[in-house]
Image (cartoon, rainbow, N blue to C red; front, side, top):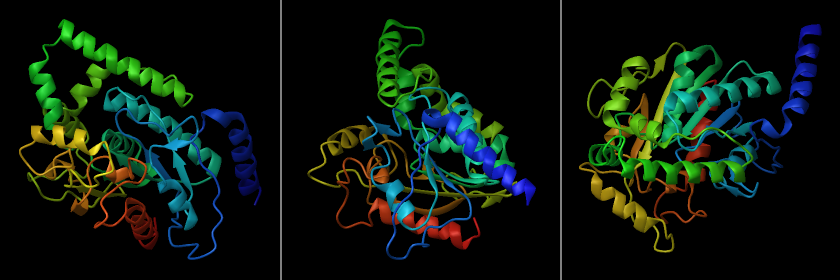
Length: 317
């Protein structure tokens, strides 16, 4: 009893001290089906490249998804790391926030969910600290590398003026996005590009192979070191005529030989238990962007995330 009281008090004190720097969460008012997404462990969301938690505290990267999960009883925390940096650097930043979440909540583990580059970050955390992680779920993440990253790496000479100019632009963008979300994490666009390239991912997978398929387009181990691994992705490109970002997805999709979501190939997205790899969603649709304008003939991203939280709940996670 004394230990539990001490844990609660410690959590309250840490919550007060960490305040603005802690990952964001909030309570939700639920009137129906209030335990559908109530997982045993908190859900931690990790954004992708050039991502954020919310701009000005208003516009969410995970548009409407945290509230949809909280409506069903889940404890949800939205993290923020460097917009552009290596997977290891971003992963260490994420790990620090996971420790904060565990201290604040008193939970023993978390359910990690990462989109795009964020899926690699959550893999890193689970690999180096599996004792803190109940499950890893990646959404549209390039586990075998991204062909667009390969194109840029092959055609932009290392150390050239062009590379320097592109890196300066990306790093400046990352700095601005960080300031708009109240963070000052370091930016390194070249390291980010290296991490997402096929050679970079091959090296990463050699160091952290958990859940990675042995075949080109198969599934990986479902459970490694007590951590459950899941993934899903889309193959839609032009999904909503009102979404101005679809044109950009259409352009970037041309760099890929396999079906893709505009930035990540279908087979490259596979990790562990592949829930589905052909939702009619593009890369931004997967996190309900932009402004929830996704394909009308496909399950909504919020419904997909809610169903997955229920899957985790039923698995005792």
